[in-house]
Image (tube, rainbow, N blue to C red; front, side, top):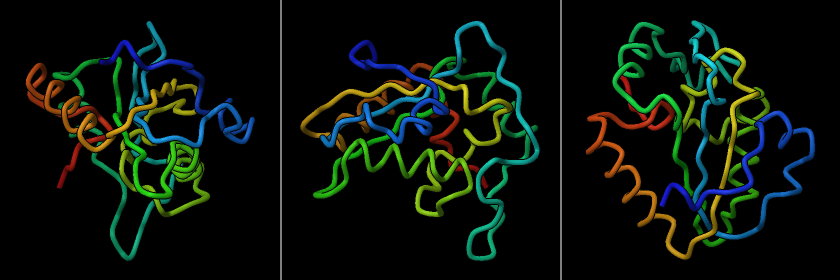
Amino acid sequence: MLNQFKNFCSLDMLYDTKFSSIPNKKGLYIVKAFPNKKVIFSSDTTAIREFKGKNMLYDTDELLAKFEISDKEILYIGKAGGKRNTLKQRISQFIRYGYGLAKNHRGGRAIWQVIDNKNLLLGYMECKNPEKDEKLLLEQYKLKYSVLPLGNWKIG
């Protein structure tokens, strides 16, 4: 299923073009590291640092330890599938959160502790049942690597 993701583009380009290339359809999206570029973690974030009194930062040693046993390319798997939740809306929320402009997409927040995160690549695919398909992809990933992708972790 991972080979069905298409239209990979940097997070920065998607933001700059106001997400105009993203369809208003249900689907899945993934964030990938740029090929042959080492992923380095920051102790800070480009997103919000605190939400309702809770620290949104992960410990960089903890991120690195889990990252070392995972796929070094796929960093996050997300879905868009509610009644009014489209790929365009959800990806916009995700990226705007990373720019510190929104508080409504805390899922995937570890992505925003990657240095040079705006150059990470995002691709998407349309599908009829994103909830089921995301669950399947995450299960396959966890079977292979024994952890979830970086942005899908629930640490601490």
